[in-house]
Amino acid sequence: MMLHVPQAISSDAVIRIRNLIDTAPWTDGRVTAGTQSAQVKNNLQLPEDSPATRAARLIVLDDLGKSALFFSAALPKRIYPPLFNRYEGTTNAFRNHVDNAVRTFAPTGEHVRTDLSATLFLSDPDDYEGGELVVQDTYGAHSVKLPAGDLILYPASSLHRVEPVTQGVRVASFFWIQSMIRDIERRRLLFELDMAILQLRQAQGDSEPAVSLVACYHNLMRMWAEL
Image 1 (cartoon, one colour):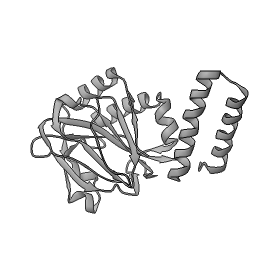
Image 2: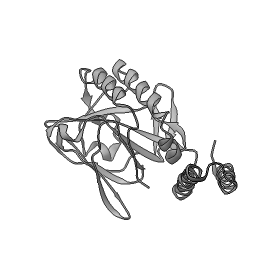
Image 3: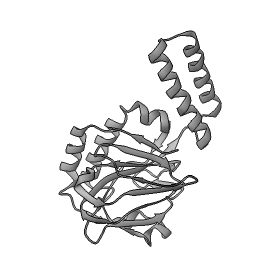
């Protein structure tokens, strides 16, 4: 399941993040790539331990924590601390690859199983040409280019790429989520159920059918959640 999360972070948060990272020192993006990914990755990245990265990721996580849509879709157990990349000039693309199944955050040694990948756009589409995130699944290839502050959530098992940026600068944050619900179909069913409950409650309030569906949702969570 791919999900567009509009305004995952506020426009003010985008401005504060860009003020932190735009003038920070960037390095070769292959530093966090796996063996296969390193052969096809050609972008810039903020070092994981830089002061700008640490400050900017706190802004991302603080605003993201307010997004009910993100939480409902991802049901996060762990989030790999957000990273930041930049595509421009000759460092302008990331060809087809699949993300590593497990990421280890070096400062803490914590392992994160990458059930979901997230790209948070920090540049508006008019700021650059090209640079589409293309995600391939059983239904074909999906091209994504969103406003600054919007996020796309998709299975980390998907083959995906970033098309070459031919003009301007594309800046984004990216990270991975280990979900409390490991199985993708169970996670999708819970999300669809949650959205249906939300619509029912908006239309009817806390009616008896709505309360019954809420109980079903939480009982399914009890059956399936890994804590």
